[in-house]
Image (tube, rainbow, N blue to C red):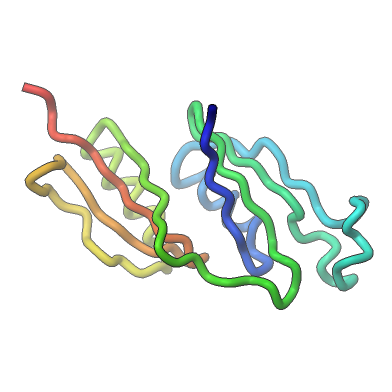
Length: 137
């Protein structure tokens, strides 16, 4: 069994996935537009090149997403994407990159459980947590 988060966007999926690719070192595996799909007639003409389905590989994991049908988008609530990173420097770098034009909800810092932890809502409205565990003794 594998669990993959599926993110919803309001017309910014491709831009967001390219941003995440840079911030987290992932690789876009798929960006399928509405155009040419069985859903092409269900969206306005100016929505044809929006993402019907996308996949971003992050190591052994896949984050999926799409641009919601016009008028159907709702911002994410009650969930975060949590990324575990093995180095405090890499954790800070990823956090600062994701925070660009977003809202930091907890600045990245050392905590009683982590060498680094922080949370934010990125410029696309997606909530993230970045965690780097304390080194094992």
